[in-house]
Each structure stands twice: as C-alpha cells, then as structure tokens.
Amino acid sequence: MLPVFLAGCVKQLPAAAVPPAVVPPMQPAPPPPEGQARLVVDVVDGPTPVQRVRMAPTPNAAGRPGFHFDEAGEPLCTPSPCAVDLPFGNVLLGFPRVGDPGVTEIEVVHVGPESSVYRRSLSVYDGRTGGLRVLGIIATSLGGASAVTGTVLLPIGLSDGNGGLTTAGAITLGGGALLMALGIWAIRTDAPTYRPGSINHFALPR
Image (tube, helix red, strand yellow):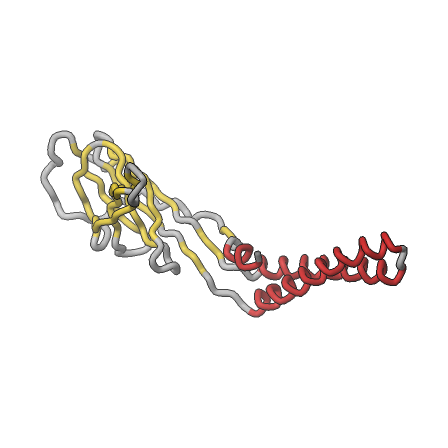
C-alpha cells in the first residue's frame, strides 16, 4: 500500500508562463500546397526534438478479434524550431518532459486553414528529495503497524472488560494514528514536484 501512495505523491506546481507570441527565425519557403497549412513548432526552452505521434493499429492476441492502438512516434523537429506543411485537421505532437527521461507528453494541435505558430514551454519533473521524506516513510510504516495493533487490542479489551488491555489498545491506536499522520505530512512536504508546461498557438503573420 505504501509504495502505491508514494508513487502518487507528487506536488504539482503552477503551470509555466504562457510563451510570448514570437515567431522564431525561419528560412523562407514557398506557400504550402492546396489543402494544407504551415505549422511552425518552437520550444522556448531551447532546441528540442519533437515527435509526430500516430495511433498505429496492432492485431489483438490470438483468440481476441479486432485491433488495439499504440502510440507510434516519428521525428518532426530534429530539433525545434521547424516548419512543416500538414493537412487541415488535428495532429498529435510529442514533447519530452524535463527531468523525466523516456516520458513523452502528447498534445493535440489543430491545423486550420491559416498557417500558425505553436510555441511550447516544456513540463518539468524534479524527483530530488531529502532526509525528511525518508523519516516520513519510516514514521508512516511504524505508525500504520501500531494503529493496526491498537485496532485489534481495543475491541478485545472493551468486550472483556479488561482495563489494561483497553488502555494499551487506545494508546497504541492513538499514537500510531498520530505517527502515521506526521509521516504522511513529511512525505508530502518533501515530495517530488511537477510543473506543467504551457502553450501559445497563434496565427502566423502574413
């Protein structure tokens, strides 16, 4: 139970500021073909590899009819900024997450009749923690075990009229609950942080 709790204990910080509507310097290019629009992709954190993500159908395992869809990425910008001509509609773009190698955040970008600029600041994950988190894990584990013991002893003492067992159960339960609460506070206080990125999608000046 504790590993599951720790995995979900990440403090979310306010999102990054919206990038200013600035067109990155690009090489001149001919107008996009009929039925397509130019999408300029830029990452304000610096040159970044950006993927175009497609949903690739894969047959289900033997005995199960149909298909399931997996994300399949292909290079779009190597690195950003870049300009691509795309058909009107939605396209999936994949951006790396700073501090979390191997994680790709996917965004849906609408390509309309007008050429546009999609500027993004990357999300940032900081997994660094200190000694307070270790103490919190220890306290939560010991407090949980103590609270469970008190939960068992207290009803037995009450039903048997055993004052000593009742007192021991109440103290163990209360002390364990308090220790567990302090441990959870310490874990949350010294937790990894996640700051979502932000975007600015605006029309490309004519």
